[in-house]
Length: 430
Image 1: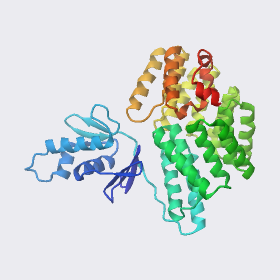
Image 2: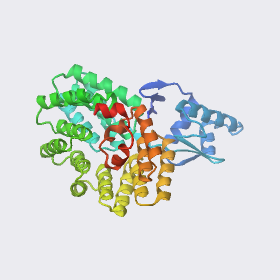
Image 3: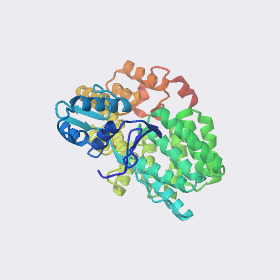
Image 4: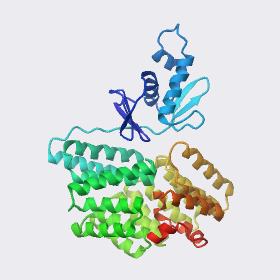
């Protein structure tokens, strides 16, 4: 992996500058621990032997390296915030060496723009990657938006793009919720400062108000203002449709989503979200048909495969649901949503052993990334264990977890939500 910069979780590594940053803040790391990190990152997923590390860091064969290597690895683990018992990033292969187990992505750094045309092109590339709705593409989108701002720090829609990107990262657990919330708020405020009459600025603010502030009336006002400013904005229609679905207004959501489709019929993101709104409206067969339209455009589009699996489950086609949810998990960059959905299907289909294995899989993934209690709640609901499901969902509510966006409209939780007044603050807000 010959790359000058790579990103994993909240960390950015610049090999040429010998620099490690966490959420944008430089972190001090001594030479040998950094070199170990560099060697691991240049072969992610592969074993780096202790002998190879020794040859690179202690070339003098007469020097004992065992204690020094152990110390350097421990320092690196402490800097990354992990231990050998609970590793998110570095796996120890006893007596053999180490392996970097977290996803590693190259940081795309487009050439510095030299004109307004180049800035606009890079902004559109950022939107393109953001709408691919994968973790890999998310970081590419962020890189393009940042490149635009390097060329023009007053480019308002690039700030809006970054705010939207961090809203998406909170939903996909690519960035810890609190970090994502703060960045989304900051970039949204910058977008409004530099572009108060741009629809994109108000859409981003509305997303922040919905996901992190639970200010639904304020979000609605921002969406409506954005549509007044730009009635033909497919992105504004798409975002408002999602808000309406989450607000239990399915008919209005479908109208707005259909308008977005007319404005941008080739957007896989808009097409897939239309399927999601059909699913939430109870039109499961319509959701299936819409998902297949998306998969005709893009055969490996995780959001469409995920919704397809959920719709199949509601149609009592459990085998088909399991196949599609496994496909969604395979291409979704380790996102826990598909695992929670699979666990729910297994439980509902009378396969409790497989459902409990999904609980264990969520535990395993939680060692590497944030996993919302919401996904555990889905599995417990599928198993018919309402008390456990309510407990973990209330925990998510106390944490103000962004995954709760669909809490009150998710068909899988319909029977559960009538058994206790769950998440009163969220229910009142919606």
